[in-house]
Image 1 (cartoon, rainbow over the protein chains, first blue to last red):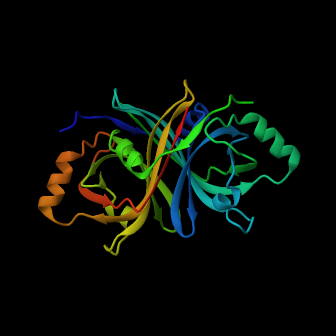
Image 2: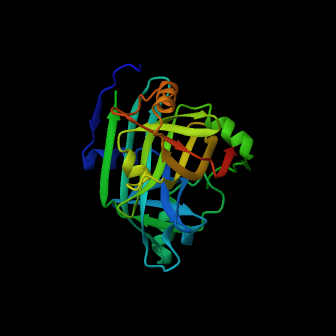
Length: 133
Length: 133
């Protein structure tokens, strides 16, 4: 049996603050009707999660109107069996405005991926999180 | 600009070996037609990913015939800007057989979650992974 852990839920504000404190997470989307996940770098800019990706249309959908995605980030330590995880669900849109896209790309340091030409903003619609101690 | 990273794809065998070397990952599923993600502990047992969860029917679907999910695990170091990530996509099923469920529950040490009464096996249908150095 595992040692007793104490888990507490994070408030929306605390969850978004923690999300902004780490440089990468995982975007969850639907591709050809199947669930897909990809590790990417992010920043939280003006209250939105901003990621840069190569496969923009796979994540956001071909229509261009955006798609609902999930995003998860956290710090979980195997050694300490402790940490936190934040999950958001919200509408993802490709940033079409060139000036805005350039500003986002400057803010994101995309060391996790190679080609990252497409800038995607995710609205934090539903925000949940937990901390485990 | 970020430093140049070298990314290499992992073979299926290497990806599954690495997946089995870490105690937790993230299961990705569809809940009320929306993408959802949850950090859980896992083991690789008889070539399948085994997780224990409270919300079994949310992950696998109410029908009981199973659902296609994605699963991601990895070790990514922010300090070193290096690491690896493995993603699988495959059919998830609740383990109904009591003996088999008990064997799975003994193998998984579910320190990431509280109630974990439902045992789920995920078939590694599509397996991809990368290593970043």
